[in-house]
Amino acid sequence: MAHVDPVAPIVGGLALMLLAAKLGGELAIRAKQPAVLGELIAGIVLGNLSFGGVPPFHALATNETIEVIAGIGALILLFEVGLESTVGQMLKVGLTSLLVAVLGVALPFALGWAVSARLVPEASPYVHAFIGATLCATSVGITARVFQDLGASRTQEARIILGAAVIDDVLGLVILGAVSGAIGAAARSASFSVLSVAQITAAATVFLVGALVIGVFVAPRLFAVASLLQGRGVLVTVSLSLCFVLAWMSSLIGLAPIVGAFAAGLVLEDVHFKDFVSRGERSLDELIRPISDTLVPVFFVLMGLRTDLRAFSSGGSLELAVALIVVAIIGKQACSLGVTMPGVNRLAVGIGMIPRGEVGLIFANVGAGLTLDGVPVIGPSSFSAVVLMVIVTTLVTPPALKWSLERANMSPRSRTRL
Image (tube, rainbow, N blue to C red; front, side, top):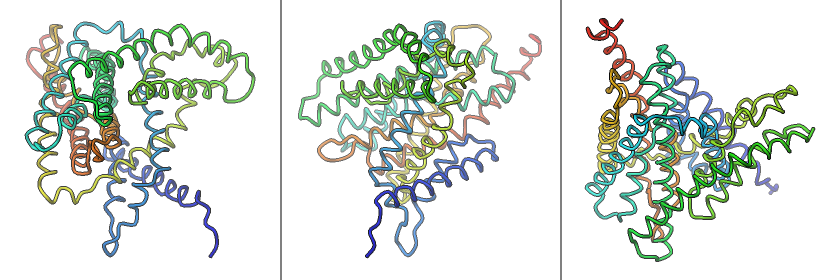
């Protein structure tokens, strides 16, 4: 029998996943939905195909090499999310954005915990906490696209949501770090205590703040030295190295590597790359995009491959999914209570914070990779419920946000202002 190169099935699987992702993304875009939704659904279709009772692509969902590649894709994604904001923008967001973010994290976390405790009473508090953590995230890219399509990107509502999204990401990652650390401690037979959770939360906060402070001072000097090198790909290589180093350091202190990747993106600004751009090189955003376009879809297709639709046949997973969808929507409406500026469309702010998108999937994937007493914290049933929640919150936001903005513009009060 001829020897089969172990790389062959990996590249074959990746080819299938990438083609499925691009096809699904194209169909989603034509349906006026974000491409990420199509990539996720493409994975769900592949993962639930069955020929004669045999799922032909099940091996892809459990392949460790593909999981590593998808994990790197998640790091790149969070790095890109960080690149879209800067430390300066974080410091400039107003009190309204801060209140919107805090309320939009606190209530969904509490409601997610309550739903899990009610519907999965046999699970440990750690599981309930992680379910709550998956509801904290906000994928503001979808909301930003709706504002852009409506020509409302410069409205107060858009600025509040975009500012709150940055803080929301930071708070969500701190919670993720705290919950992941507490679960890791429990797996090592350490007892649960409020003090230990507080210590892990403090560690996550200190790491993020420390990484940002150090990065602000180190990044300009790092890239000034790097610009002396004349070889190809220096900018993207140094940038990704910074991303991976901070991700590695994040894991060393018990936090999810995506925390470090996000911090790396936040500290990098266009001014750091001026020497590269001045000599005719492309910007970092342009250099990262082809890497992201290749690796990030692998992550989303893998999340879809791991979504078992048969889990909903029992009723328990479907019940959990419906409950999570309801509290995911209701929880973010608390954001409107944080709006302190007069004349702002509070309903639009609450709706704009609803979509979980890619960030919620990353949180769920972290939970699926953590084990407690040999059992994944986010099991197949809970994982499928979270994926369905992500899909629905992503689908409902664009039409609901458009309706809320048009409703406000058509009100007598709005016509009077105009």
